[in-house]
Length: 126
Image (tube, rainbow, N blue to C red; front, side, top):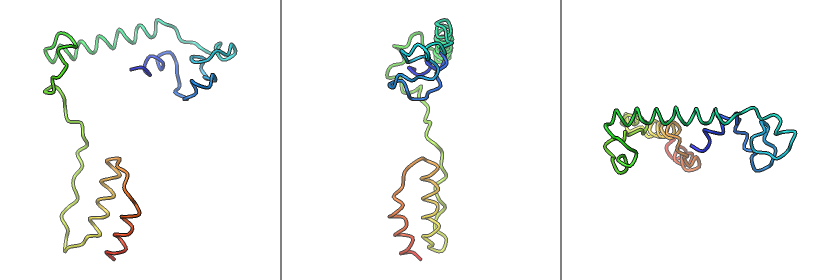
């Protein structure tokens, strides 16, 4: 939530806020860079108004009147984990296909694997 109003103001997420060299003039005290700032408070107000309106629509669909009534209501949560088909069972006891599938599943899931251990297993299986 804290980044969204900055983006509404024109932030390009350069991660230079702490250096006083913000290229769009939002997070700087340098007069030359501040002249580049083209945002206005009304944009942030409009964004927050529309966000609140959308939240109210979702709450209405859920049958909830205020945000406090959502606290602890896990029945409204949806499992967002990736559905990854688990590797097929070994064919003819071939462990090599399992290792390849394991690397593919880890990559899709964004899990870092210990490539050294997988490489060692691969050499043992050959």
